[in-house]
Length: 382
Image 1 (cartoon, one colour):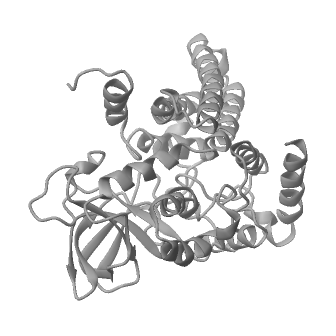
Image 2 (cartoon, helix red, strand yellow):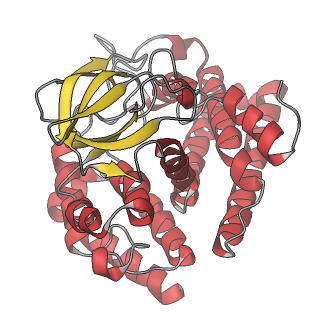
């Protein structure tokens, strides 16, 4: 593992120089507008060098890398302050889902372009009346002349404005309710009947979008699993969100925490005993987060995921939101004023504003608590 870590470090150090030196630190939550073209070029360089989709089988462009090696890569990638990945939804969500549920033809069609960074994906789950409650989706699709015809609306669709494809959870059995009658469709974003409208966030940026399907079409073969099995496939996709990249994410969290501490010392806020207590609690919770993630990786390696998998998203999102609030507190009054016109935010202001969304997207904290109570602890439904 040491040799692999050295290999990753050396490659990143060599290539995050020259033409890509300015790409360090670009992108990420609340900053997805930064350097999209250079980050797309970087994604393709990673793919050509075999640094994307490490855990995939070699026949589909991966390395058959162990979970431990995948963790090493994500950690070193974060330590190098490499640019935020533009292909993470393809690699981390739809790719593994296609590997599990796709036909051989689908694997050959969709996996190589993801690995090479040539096709980007977005996720069509949430709707205005069905956010974290995915069983309530109302987007509908019907088969007509060898194609699925899709009508409905999705919302909070990350990176839809730059995506080539969207995986869409739609109701394909008329009259069906809740988990039944849903199908998992693969839909090209450049077809007539697909409209993307950016949503302006508190940060002033627009990485979330509304997506409208008005008779949009995709081939009948572009379905994962059988018609009506969409719920099972969709739940599998959500499970892949808790993978090896979480340890790299936590290195980014550590960097943000250290920045908050530095500002607290500079402004004198660190002399306040209440602020000091909050800083210490945040540091301790970050250590706990890492230990829980390592325990999760151990259980996943053994093929026996435990309850720690369920609490991971709830824990990190609540922690990150509190860190954002602490970031504002250590700045004092200066944190209430933009750095410059019209709306230039510093890193800690952006952290505070964007982290408000952490406890909502990818399953709200309320939904996560229900899942833990009912599925992990076996408590009765409320």
